[in-house]
Structures are given as structure tokens and as C-alpha cells.
Image (cartoon, rainbow, N blue to C red; front, top):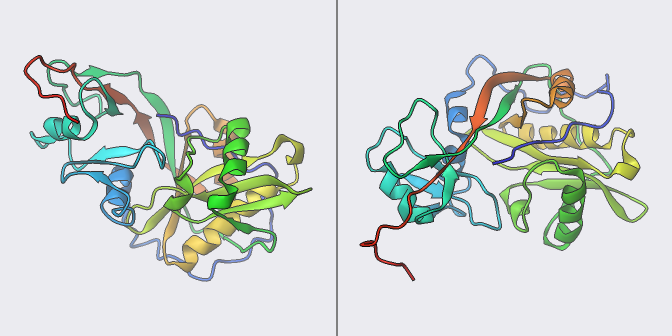
Length: 263
């Protein structure tokens, strides 16, 4: 599962205004970020979730993210098969978790999880426009060219997405993806190659941060561990790396001859 998010495309401004609602960093709950997709799928995005009490996922045209409550529950393996079927992929458990017979582990993708610090100050942007269903073709086109990470026809339903237009085109965009309890993930940060170097993505990231803070939530994001340039720019904005994350996958076993065929 790819979670490569693009970096802001210009230097960090020195005059970012303080957010309207400052989180209390002494009492932040970081534990939900150890399983952010599950927290989102059982909380803010429960209305989008498919699955059961042990395994859930987003619809295929919304997001590739899926999660389990705990890999320690002995029923989780059957719950995953019930959700995705046989010979299907699902986000995998840590390397320390042994797979049952017939399950195959994929090659993990190394990433990092970043969280906001007290240095991160959002600010609304007068040029930022809300993006919705009518903008999906442009959003998909920009993502296909900028490749900030997975973005699907209904991904915009996960949260607030904004963009800046230039010459009638969508020049840059950014928005909200996972929403674990108390947090919101910034994602789909992308700039058209014709408009890079103008600071548009940075401005949109700060606009998204401002509105996250207005709701009383905190900002976080994911990036490829190899994308040190992006990580460095996000750190200048006021994010800090919380942990390294291995985004792996598993393939469920082939269908047994005795298993019923659904549908």
C-alpha cells in the first residue's frame, strides 16, 4: 500500500499566524495513531466502513486502507477472509505476528508517521476553494501526474479537500484522509508541475491545518521513509517524526475446495 505524500513546493513562510485553537500537547493521546485506520473506521468514518467487529475497510472507490481491531484476537484471520475473500490482499500485521498456514506476506513499504508539534501554526488561505464531486476529474488528473499517494473517485468524501486555481486549472490541492480519534491526517498534497515553486502546496497545508485546529483536532501525516526531502520540509513547517511504519500486506489463502462460493 503506497502512502507517499508529496511535500510542500516552496520554502516555509516565517509569518504563519497562530491557529485559533491550540491543542494541549501535554495531554495528547497518541495511542490511536498506532492503528489510525481502525480508529477512523470505527469512529469518524464508521458510516463508510465495510466489515465487522474485527476487520474493516473503506469501499474500493474511497480508499485502499483497511485495518483490524487486533492481530492478537484468534478470530481475526477468519474475519479478514469474511471481509475480502480468499486469495485477496489485506494490510498485513507486524513481522512479529506469525501467519496461519496458507497466508503469504508481501514486501513491506517503509514509511514514517509525522505528528504536529507546538511549532505548527495553521492559517486560512483566501485563495483556497473547497473541492467536491464536480472537481473529481481534475483532482484525479493532478494526482495521476504528481503522484502524492492513493486518491480514488470518492476519496474526497473522507474530509475537507481544498485547491488553488491558476489559469482556469487546478494548480494545487491538499486535504484530509484518515481521521483517528482527535487527529486528522493531511494527504493528497500535490502541485501541477507548471505551478511549482510558488508555495501553493505549503499554503494549502497550512489552510488544512487551520481548519483541523478549528475543529479541536490535531494534524498528522504519513510519508515514504525514503522521501527525506519531503520529511525535512514538513519538519520545518512544525511536524515531527513520531515513528517509522512498515506498510505491509498479506494475501489470504486460496479457496479450499470445501469453501462455499459467495454471490
